[in-house]
Image (cartoon, rainbow, N blue to C red; front, side):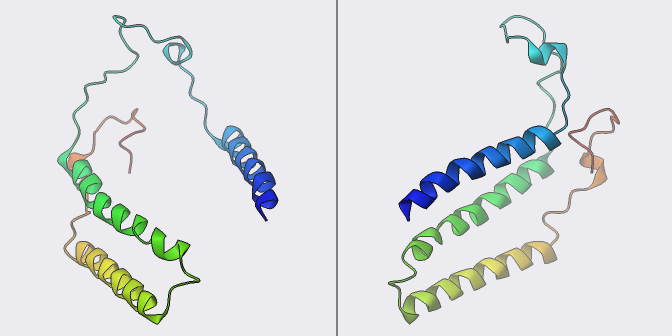
Length: 127
């Protein structure tokens, strides 16, 4: 069984990397292809203002990410868990879904257009 994973993992990795190379857009600037040197001006201003709305999304994502990663011990020991472990997992996932529904109903994740940059050339702020 381990031999299958040993063979399958590099094949999947090479497949995903090749799909990324084929399908990803390529925007090469002269400054991007050259080496980075301190003291030279960069091709873009790196001190752009970040909206509070985007920081709020990051802060709200963090607890959900940690809660999802805390399910991993149950998944690893799923064969040895009994009904009690399954009930605890269902309660945990129910609380997670209730918290997400509450965020959606309170419109916490809504980002107004006023927070978005008006520059049409920028690909980072398009919605």
